[in-house]
Image (cartoon, rainbow, N blue to C red; front, side, top):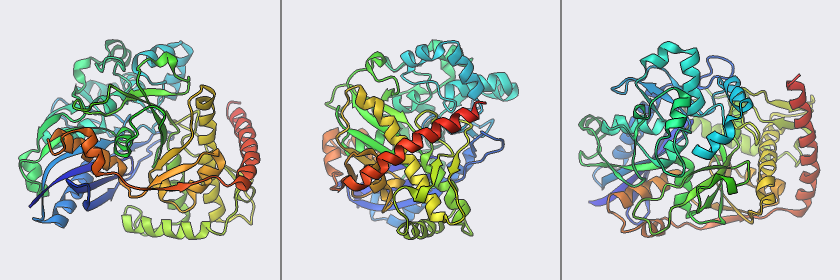
Length: 508
């Protein structure tokens, strides 16, 4: 029986598990989707038990598919970041997960910005003030949901919650901790000052261990329920975007990654935690390198564009309806229908523009109002879908401008995530931005990065470089088309004017 390592991708709308042998070959994969809930305008929550059940279902599916053909020696998580779960001392939730897409703290964040707090928060944490991150969310709970705040003895990220369910240990990693906006980006320790701003103590947060560190064996109950070997070790993972970069080898300055799942994030690499030298639009976080790595300490520089992928998912649910929207098979069928219909559309969306329902270069999360502008009776649902795709690409181009102006080259982007698997969306992105793309063949890159950490941490790989070498994949190239670039130059100028006009109306 051959040893195997398991990478788990805990995303915003689904959990994926991918089992690899030690040569990097995929042995089995499974996915379970779950829903976002919007109990009030601007609120975006998740059921923590639904996430836990999805993880158990994925683990059961993986073990069922491989049977006795492989021995799973270790697993690690690549988890969504920024979402918050308040829990009791024993880890029982006292509220739903308040996701990074949530906008209930917009007024609080605006007040903090007006008080001049953003520069101080960014200097300590590396992050701008965003409504969906844990720092303002905890402060909002203290002010507006006193009972929930008082009942919470601990405040967890999604990573911490699932790791605790797997091992009985409250533990996190630097990149997921950084996404809570309560960590000092220079030292990797919880910030007394930021915790005080939130209204909590650092002791209410999970222990921070390096990526690749051994957390412990899975609980006996998890082994019984999933079929995982009792000796399976949980290795500390990282933020899903950071794990994607790790899996692709984007670990040195000059390389750029576009993650295009539910959230769209542009990520590069730097060798300094000094926020003052970065373009003002960028955030700083830890790259999930294991301590054993030969590379010097590295950080990621990124700009979140928020839930641009969620905008297309929203349209898909309403215009390509299925009898079971939670079914992966039904979603795949709907996307296939969407892709076929997009072949009949033309650049420029037939005069239709879409400002994203959630996300954008200026407001990656929050209580936003999107717009379909220029809608006519002859527009089809495919035109609307193309407008959503083009709107995301316009927002990306807008976000790249200050990066280029700061002298940081963007000569090529590695594009991964759901949008990268579309037959059309990468072409739109390349044509709108004018940047050549590399689309790595294969998928599940967050899970690949997590599996590499699992392999290094468990001793299956001698080094990070040895682990990465097992997972090298070829990439498909997408080059911008000069004629379409000219068309999109005009469309982008019109999009900027439209966004400015609608934004001004929204502030009236």
